[in-house]
Length: 163
Image (tube, rainbow, N blue to C red):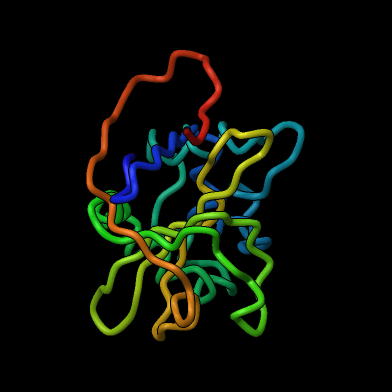
């Protein structure tokens, strides 16, 4: 994606990111979504894709309310790529966060905001978290830019970077 200042950010989505973006790690009472050496994040993704794990399975969790908005609004994740982005996210401007995000894509949705946090590890950008927040908690006092272009490329095995 290209930002209004010319900065280009390459982002890599992998199947193993999906369970974490939905927050499935919080559903500790649903064995099908608990990650183990025999049940990887990629396996959980595949089982959801094949409908072996369903929405009604997830709703049975005593902890479902913790992730309900993520699941409900996940279909809107693509809309974030034509909106605004927080650059150089400053976690000191919020009371509490564990995000490692350098960038946060966001947009207003219903009575709150959808956020996709992007972090990097050795210059590889990945989706760190996807959340719905009913207030401007993560955006207040941050620096914003508009996203002006998005190009989707098939993964070639090369590491994503910021130019």
